[in-house]
Length: 193
Image 1 (cartoon, rainbow, N blue to C red):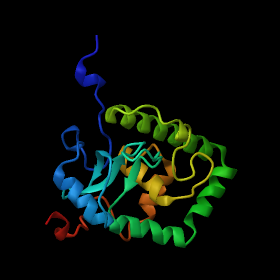
Image 2: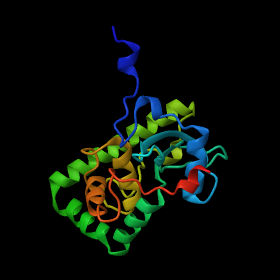
Image 3: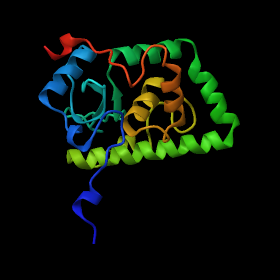
């Protein structure tokens, strides 16, 4: 017989525990300040800064307005999003896509990341009490499983589920180290006011 604790989701994301997974009103306020707009349909905070502020929002796969929303792990922290944008402007995702195309081992790992993303989205859907979202069935994010289209998406995935699942989220995390690392806070204190 399984105990209830063994069937609960055990978060693996950066800086998060089972106790800090559920978003608070302050978390929603901080996310809104980070994004410059009111956040919507946030189900979990799967990654947090060392100071406790959200880094990533886990968003329901169907928004309250009825729209399907495939980006489950939405990267919110402006310092991290700016770093990922710099890498995208430099074309980092093209080299990564070439690796997926040319290296079967890396392609298999990336397909595994895609499957994990879909499983995590399903977990979030169930937690949010939503019906199936057939419009995005089989669609993950960031170009998975065949290309790297959006570094924000693959990085958000790594921050939300931890290293070792998404090889290109892991690589992006390494590449942004000159601008941001999980060990250092780059938050604006005004986000909490």
